[in-house]
Length: 314
Ligand code: BDR
Ligand code: CA
Image (cartoon, rainbow, N blue to C red):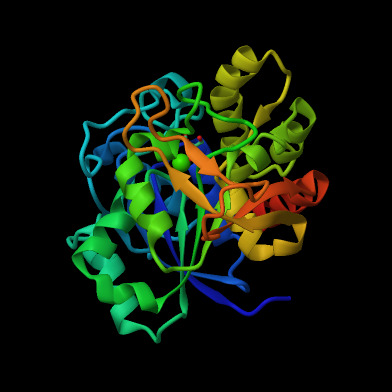
């Protein structure tokens, strides 16, 4: 059993983001969610900030603080992924209008103020989307860098290369400059890339396990996944599809399910062909200084047992 961690979830829901948020909210003994900051990514900010509130209400946590952050990447126009996540970002189940308010403060200011008002190194940033909010906070208030305990993020790839382009993973591709700021920062970083999330495959049988929870959460999770998975199943020609963002929360809950290497990871920000590629020095050939723990493997059965078990709490 680990001690309780204070976290901020930075996210662009997204069905897999939604399940990550549910996993965090289903684990109150280990995780205290200080707030959720929405960022533009899978769908525009208006929708991601609404979807985050839908998920909080689904988990019966209308008391949570949800903030809208940046609505475009730092230096580029926004690229979205409705082709995967549908028009709303949470296509699949019948959605409801959230009643809980969006907070007035900008998400970036919430990140800055919260880090400043808590003891140093007591807050973990969990990043499930493009890194625009986090990099903007680091740029606006560099004094917060030393106060972050750790960043755990889903993004990038090495052996799996890319999903949105042949070379790049979506979260990094959308805002490569933000990703580079985060990777170059002095903060401790753990990366859950496609190399690991593509091992976490949701089968029909696993989806039935979620449905068999017999709860509204179980049913909505199943319907969300049935929708978002159709794209990957078709694309990869498999009957199971990867589950990305919940790996971040599972890593916080049970780090022993995962293994990786402390290596150098940098982002391509110039090339048209490989924009947003994470160049991960897995074999230690570059001589560049290691800057992140890059996860490569996971106990898949342990992961799904954890997720299914925790979701049954909601
Ligand atoms: C990442 O991109 C988004 O589509 C998912 O929510 C996940 O964060 C996977 O590449
Ligand atoms: Ca996401």
